Length: 165
Length: 291
Image (cartoon, rainbow over all chains, first blue to last red; front, side):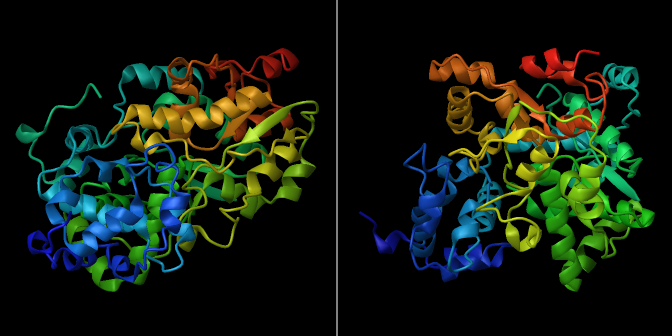
């Protein structure tokens, strides 16, 4: 049972204020998103409409701490079939951004920042890779980690490890 | 005709067959490819945890591209989608543009609207055109059957990528496969997502998603699942063995890139399109096109 006294009615406004989050207020619960979702087809606990309802009701902590919000594959199918232009892929992205700020991001998110700050890319490029490229007549690829270090605001000392991803 | 290529993270390290065949196909079709000197991530992997930073990263690439005056083409569907979305957002929102430009200033860069961003395959279809490609085909891949995989970010969200192909009834890759003389299979799971986006969060789930298509094609029998995205390749080729084990099916679905098929039909040798680098061997193709 949901206790409305424990809900935070301002949560939906918080989500709507994030980039991509505004569409949530237009949802009329038709569940076209849930019907079309390829993730829901394999994981019945994952239900886009339910995530939207919980957010509109203000179940702030339940939504932000739920591991289910990280299961979206970002295929945008829900967005294509939504009659209300809710743009659920983007709404969920807004929710995940709030979850990250609240400390609920999965370890992989930190690892990604570390890789980008160190290499400017997810997969490091070493001499080994460039030798393979040269053998096929492909031009070398240079890493430019410094720009990413600056953008991410991570100082070299504080860079999380992540080279082995 | 010239285009600036955005290689992204995965292709230039893990999918040299894709890059090689794409470059050769471009050359054969009269498209001069120019490389970006400061190539990096498009920002996509950061979107779910920090979309503000992800947008700055995308804007960095767009600012670099703008200096060349060339259209930007990406081999990865996620890169193409992310960069096209960023261009769309920044071009239509001056306030956001100012905010992002304050972040780019220390890097000596400034975002300005006007970079046309597309997936490489879309660029070929829109700028070279199907008929011009057909005119250059010298070797028909007759007797072969391939299953096109459109993936997600090539055509969705249609708000950004609209006016090119219908994500609910896609045709463009089908037409490209047919132009090589091969048969393009229409199949039940044609629109399914590869699951690559959740591989980090839930490997079992990702395997089930990719496994659905692999199982169907394994049963149907194809000479290759034809891709245009390295993320999809991670799932369908890189993970195929593990998925087969999980589903307890002996999977043998060769995985190819559409650009490799085009290259062969344009007269290139298997080596020129990197066919020996494919890990699930496209045996029938290899046997038919010995060097």
